[in-house]
Length: 355
Ligand code: NAD
Ligand code: IPM
Ligand code: MN
Image 1 (cartoon, helix red, strand yellow):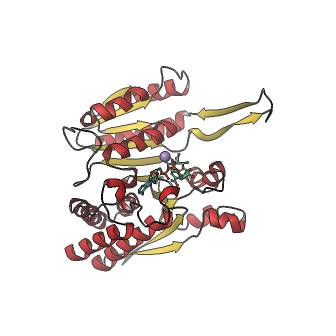
Image 2 (cartoon, helix red, strand yellow):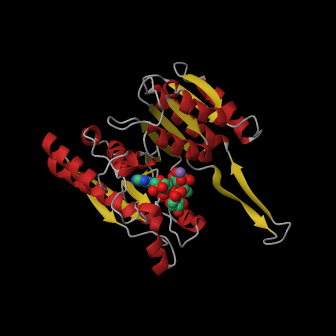
Image 3 (cartoon, protein in one colour):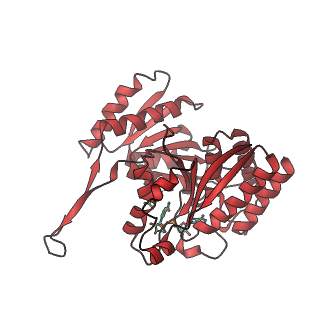
């Protein structure tokens, strides 16, 4: 039996609820297919752990994660801890220290889910490739004269030829594998005359190696309009860490809800385990109510299975998700009345009936 070691970090807020639902459906899939086994290590890292241990993960946390084949993550962020502490000690520490430099965020309209766009000509089918290690998230900058009227704070965006080149190649490869073979390189190179110009130049250089991919450059402000007005003209998108953070939330809402969006943080060299999580956060307003949409987390689990080369399992799980959406078993964010576990149970039932 193929066995995959998975580190599971449910985290904060609705994280444990959506991960609980995901573990349920994964267990059904494993039990029904009998072709693979997921060997989970449950890690209680997050804000409660911080309150008792004074840190978000143990000092050897990254070493421990590296003993796994993949990481499944819920959310982090707590009302009583400043976000720049919680996020930088856990989520951003993992992404950065393991150089998971690719972030893939697929955006698709699922059957039974009404997109926010009034009259889509065709269903939305995009892939957002987010650079995941540089830009404003490189952690460069600082504050001087704190509290003085002349206090100064800088948030320096870093772009390197190495960092931009590797994400651009990944984006061209992704575009090559897609039906439209088109890539939109999103920047803000009219106002930002250094890093963003480097992005544009590297895009032009690398495009020469991919003559069958149609490459277009777009400014991020205009891109928001295009996403709403002409969604069917978009296929693969690549852009910076911060700009794609923002566009991917917009994209999720356009496709139906932030609650369905998935995010894969990948090390293409497979030296570090890749890290799968829903796009959404802790969602304080609905925590503990049992109403969080688990589809973002479950969709992320399908991407994890694909990364682990369990394509059959990934396909079956994705089609079970689609069947359940089509059957209108939807959480409140999608206009339905189902709870988190109702959705998980419906997906599990669909899986056990279809295998
Ligand atoms: P959020 O994604 O937590 O919530 C935004 C809105 O979307 C809320 O109204 C929430 O109820 C709704 N929502 C989110 N996920 C949902 C789901 N699965 N089902 C139904 N509705 C859902 O974003 P926020 O409010 O900006 O952030 C809250 C906390 O989470 C902050 O501490 C933030 O830093 C953190 N955060 C963490 C991650 C992460 O762990 N990956 C991502 C984003 C935000
Ligand atoms: C995301 C989140 C994170 C990010 C935050 C919580 C640091 O918004 O994964 O989209 O900005 O990358
Ligand atoms: Mn985000």
